[in-house]
Image 1 (cartoon, rainbow, N blue to C red):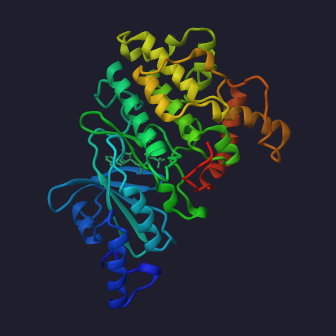
Image 2 (image 1 turned 90 degrees about the vertical axis):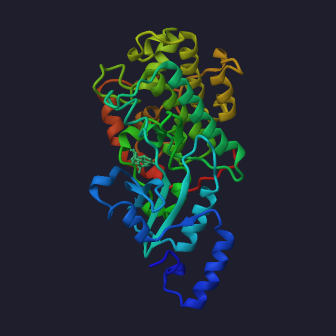
Image 3 (image 1 turned 30 degrees about the horizontal axis):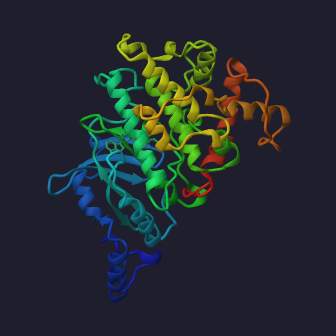
Length: 390
Ligand SMILES: Nc1ncnc2c1ncn2[C@@H]1O[C@H](COP(=O)(O)OP(=O)(O)OP(=O)(O)O)[C@@H](O)[C@H]1O
C-alpha cells in the first residue's frame, strides 16, 4: 500500500488519487513519503533487536534504508483520527525546518491509520541516557563539551522561537529530547509533534514525574503556553547539564532533592559553585559555570515576562552579554501552586501566591505525586504550539 491511499480517511479511486497526489506533491514538497514495505525492510520487520527506544509517542527503531542511509524510525503509538492530509500538512510545516541543532525529519509513512516518522539517526543517544544516565555511556562530558551542548540547544531553540515564521514553541524541552550526534553536537528532537495528535489523545510523556520538573508553572497550571514556557524548561535543563543531576532526585537528602530550589538557595547563599558536577573533578571555569547557573535562574523566574528570550540566552552563554545578577528574581515553582491548591482546594489553583517556599521534605514529595495527574492533563491537553503574546 502506498502512503497516498487513505486521503480523507477513505480509499480514493485512482483518478482522484492522482489529483490528490499532484496537489499534495505541490504543497507537501518538504515531506518525503516512504512506503510501509520500505520501512519494514529497513528495520527488519520492526525487529525488537533494532528497537532503540520507547517514548510517549511510540517505539523508535534503528533502520537502514535501501541506499544504505541509517535512520531512526518512530512508529507513533496513538492511532490517529487525523486524516492523512492534515497529518502530512502538519509534517510539511516541520520537515522544512533545518538547523544544526535540530533533529532532521526525513519523511514519513501513512499506512491506514498508522503514522510513522523517519529521522536522521543520532549515534550518541540522548542527554537523559548519557550525561544523566549514571555514567554508563562512556562519554566524558568535560566542561567545554557541556558548554558547547548548552549553547547548541539554546541556538536551536532561539531558531524555533525567533527565526521561524510562524515560530514554534517546543513544549517539551528536557534531557530525553536532546539527542547527540557522533561529535556530541546536540539536536533538539520532537519539536512540532504535539500538533500531530488530536486533543483528547495527545502524547503522554513516559516520565511524567521527571517532566513536571521542567514545566513552567503558568503552563502546567493554567495551560498558558508561550515561548517563555520553553525558556523555563531550558533553564532547568541548563542546571541539569552543569550539575550532572536530574531536576528531581528523591534519593538525595531532603533539601537537595529539587534542583531548581537548591540552585536558588545556593545562589542566595552565594555558594553556587557547590552545585557544579563533582564528576568534573574541579576541572572547569568556575566563573563561567556559575554564570550558566545564573542564566538558568534568569530563565526560570516566576514571571514569564522577566525571563530572557532565547537569543539573549545564547549571547549570555557565549559571553557576548554579561549575566546581570541584579535581574535575578525568585524562580517559579509548581510546588508553590500545588501547595496552594491543597490548602485552597482544587477550584482556584491558579491564584497567585507570595508565600514562602516550602519545597523540601515529605509533604512536598506527596504534593508532587498528587499533582502529577493534574499537571499531566493540564499540560498535554493544550495543543497550540504557535504563540504571539510574549
Ligand atoms: N533520531 C534518533 N536517533 C537515535 N536515537 C533516537 C532518535 N530518536 C529517538 N531515539 C531514541 O529513542 C528514545 C525514545 O525517543 P522518544 O523521542 O520517542 O521518547 P523520549 O523523548 O525518550 O520520551 P518522551 O516521549 O517521554 O518524551 C530516545 O530516548 C532515544 O534513545
